[in-house]
Structure formats: structure tokens, C-alpha cells
Length: 466
Ligand code: ARG
Figure 1: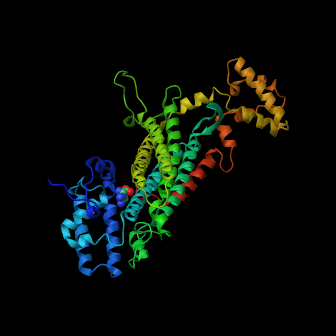
Figure 2: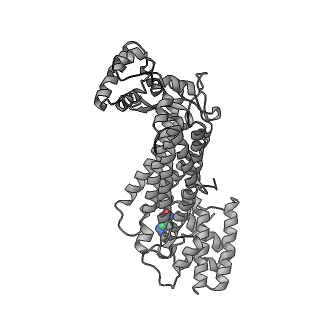
Figure 3: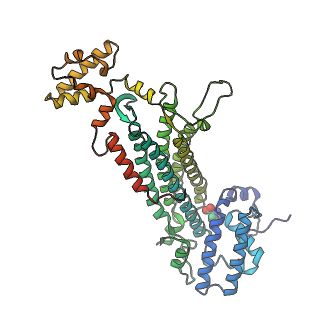
């Protein structure tokens, strides 16, 4: 088959070297912008028609042609050609094949620079919406578990050492807060993604009397990019998205890390749903937490995507440079990774089964209510530093006799402070400990239930598409 001329062949005597063609092509990865490209082209053509730049007959032909192109793409029948370097040229070539000369008029008052920036923004806006839905779905899964286990006591850790009792519900709510901030970040990022570059043309604007506000309205953009040079060249919106996605992935990675630890028999705090675990090809007993491990691993990719885009941008002079073609793969990867991870984590979290006995056993090993005993002494009038000292000595005695602080006999406890009475028992239990932390933001079951109600309120009407 004879090779087609490049769409920009007019100025060139020589054909493009095949190696160069392959090196400069973006078609293998930018094809996924195809439907957004059609959408943006339709809005552009309609604006050209409305402004009298394109004849009514030509507009009708373009609309008909783009509808046919869209159908071909949707049915996976579009014949992509490596002869054209990217998705934009492929679609324009096909349009022209379908409707003739009218197709060649579509690119009036437009360049591929403002075109690609528009397509990527449209695409990213959809990905953000899907991410927002998935964040909400994961929050709901965490809230359902938190509400089921608002009273369940487990050790809270600092330095991965048993610190104080917390409720399982409270622990899960910590992740709800992180994810809620991720939702805020993504929503704010969406506002800046949602600005229209089209009309900037190559870099300076166009000589045609275009109506950019009309295009923005038709495509659902909240604003028109103010400066044509900036509109075609900056990718800060993609960088910002990757930064928000990186943070969300870091949050997922921390949750994943805890699930891996908790599912290990050494902790035994949770059982992961069996259909999310994998076996080993050699060790018949294994039940491996591959899913959270992969989420933890994939977080590093998204951080890498962010760094890639930052480095891509930093030394580019205005306006567009071909460097920017390299924005797509990291951006696509970040969105794919985040959205897939959010979805799988929601399923995993929904199927978690905590093991109350294992949690209680761990609590009985770390003198988890030592702070409660010190606070108790303070309430009896002992200065906090003295109380801390007395309890420290009691813990030493407990370790010496191989017991937990909470199980020392009253007589023994009294040796360390005369202020200790029989009413200390409840203070030393995990239930007493969590119930006593009963203020806004703390771990008591009452507070946890109120926090769940507030979180559900925030989520109302959010992410219903998930
Ligand atoms: N494929 C390019 C990109 O992804 C857009 C086309 C710009 N290239 C050009 N030589 N006009 O950024």
C-alpha cells in the first residue's frame, strides 16, 4: 500500500524518515483520547458555524462525518493508521475521507496544540469524576465497617509499640479523614483542569472572529484560559492531578500496609476476604495478601508519574514544545492506577473480618492502660509527673512478674501509690479506657458514632455514580 503524505507535507521536499516517524508518533498511547477529540472538534465546528467562519453546508457535513467517526470508534471499527502520528490527525484524515473538502476545513482557527490540551483536560475531568466517585465508595465501605465495630477495642500503636487502646471504628475513621481530604484536593484540582485552552490556536490566537465562550459552554468548561501562550504550553493541571493522586495513593498504601501486617498470623487482627487472597505455588498453607501489597507497590508508580511530569515541565520555554507529548503516558498511568486501586480497596475493606480475640490478646501484652492509671492518679490529686513515675514503677513490677499492668492485684498496685483504690479496675480495662476518651475527635464509641454520622452527612449525594 502506498504511504500517505503527511498532512503537513506542503513545505517538505523529503518524506519523513520511517524511524523518525515511529519515534515522534503518539498514536499508540493517545488513541484513548479519541472520543474526547471528537467531542471537542464538534464544539469547535459548531462555533465556527455560529460565527460565520464555516458555511452551514460544511458544518452539516462535519457533524455527519464526526458522528460516523464516533460510531466507528465506539464499535472498535476505526481503522487507525500509523501513517498519521497521532489521534488528532487520524480522526481528521478519516473525517475528510468520509465527507470530502468540508473535513479539511475543520482545522480552521485551531492548532493541534490547543486541540491536544483541550482533549487531555476533557479526558482528565472524566477521570477525576470517576476518582471522586470511587473515593466516596471507599469511604462508605470504611464507614460501614466502622459502624459495625464502633465498640471493638484494639491496641493503638505509636512506633509500632502498643500505646493505648482505641476502637477499630476510630482507627478506620482516620482513613476516612485522609480520603475526604483527597476528595477535596481532587475537587479543587478539577476546577483548574476545567478551563478551555481551545482558541489559543498555535500560541498567539487566531485571525478569525471566534467565540471561545461558546465552545467552553458547549464542552462544560467553567472558564476560558486567559492567555494563549499559557493555554497551549503549561501542564500544571496534570501535575496537580498527579500530586493529588500521589497523596491518595500514599494513603491507600498506608492502609494496605496495615492490612498486610494485621493479616499476618503474628498480628491476626483481621481476616482478608478469601477471594482477595492468593495461594502459593509451592507452600500449600499460604494465603497471601497480594492485593494490598500491590496497592502499596503501585503507589510508587504514581509518585514516579508526578516526578516525571514535574521534570518534563521545568525547562520548557514558552510555548508548546514536543516534550509535552510525553505528558500523556504518566498522566494516564496515574489515573488508571489510582482509580483501579480505589476500586479494589473498597471491595477488600467491605470483606474484612476483624478478630476481637486477637486484638484483646494484643492489648493484654503491652500495658496499654498505663496512661489511664496515671490520669486516674491525677484525678486523685497526684501531680502528673509523680503519677507517671509511680505507674512506670508499677509497669516494671508487672514485667518482672510476667503480668500485664491491668492484671496486677490491687494490693500490689497500692504499693506504688496509696491513692489507688478498688475503683481503679474499670480504669484499667480497654473498654474503660476508650469510653473515658469522650470528646470531639477521640476514640470513645459514642464519639465514633457521632463522627460516622458527620462523615455520612458530608458524603450525602456524593459519588452516586460509583
Ligand atoms: N501529538 C501531540 C501531543 O501529544 C500534539 C501534536 C503537536 N505536534 C505537532 N507537531 N504539531 O502533544
